Length: 465
Image 1 (tube, rainbow, N blue to C red):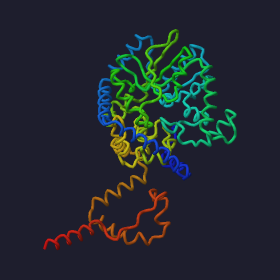
Image 2: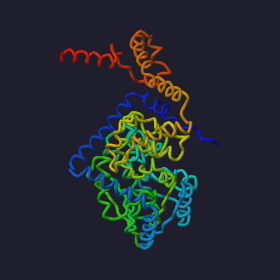
Image 3: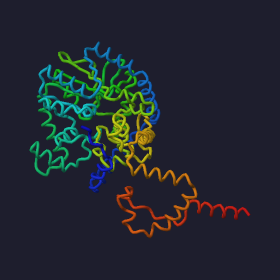
Image 4: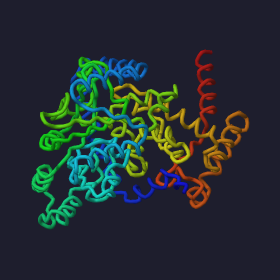
């Protein structure tokens, strides 16, 4: 069966139809972006850190195989067991086999975008396991049977009134309660029982250190520590690009990550793992799932620099106004609009066009990924693959003809300026004018730039004489 093509414009329309929510979402995300700016301004060496992080990532990708082998050797020496998965299906089978081997029925999970990417939760649930996401935002969307809409703030699209109703339904809290401390305490009581009853803990990996064979998980709630402290089985799932060469490199990324993500100096918990606990087991599953393919493309390999901070989403005018679910991919926003087409350009051909090419994403990226340029390159690739819809192909053909003939361009401009103000509204704002769905076109100028420029030149010449 061929999967239905994802259509960002249609999905975005559904989100923006609720104008108050779209405006609220925009402001909530921009608030986080503003905190990022303030945090960055406190560090005089901010740009130096960004450049250093970019250089480390570039070096790592150029020597990835060697660093992965070094990490495996060091992790194994410390008592961990390293597994390799070529894709999401193999990753899920490895995790399931480990859980079944230990007779596990109840699992607690800290936030992991890789396991979201691999759709691990529904896979394990189909095999009779109870899986609980213990990050509060992740748990909220899990109760709603929704995917996260943001990689750092998974429930940012949900208002506290809706959380109150959700907790009333599932936890028995007071109806109509919206007080955050009250709701958080109710969640804490429920999740503590899940932690106490868990037979295995699954975590993601923010950074894996080749030199030591250890890895770091960054959280603000301490749920990672709780989730792996009581069970004897710890399974850590990581994309292979999460490797950094040395322990000394870690400080560069820790200083950048939280400031870029939420405007904090550092995450509340930066948990280091070097081998299993006494009497326990640590399994590390390293996943490819299309990353090697991206690594082999010079145009897009820099997208593997990403440290999943979400800064590009927080600044993106399209993401802020269209919501994360409109992208229909685990990682939305600018970086997701590069990664998703890299795996399946036909299914995600609309995502590179969900971009204004303003370049703000590249400006805030802590590892200096040239996101807007890669999105522009993807547009060229989509066109070359014949995946552009007819209206875009026709529009680009017409624009190319118009712009390549100066006299025709000048004539059409004159006609447009004269005729446009007299056209009935239905002829201007209709299905053919997608740009005008939620925008008013600016008033037509009485004179073109060329005419104004010629007049200025005449005035300048007269003043000289």
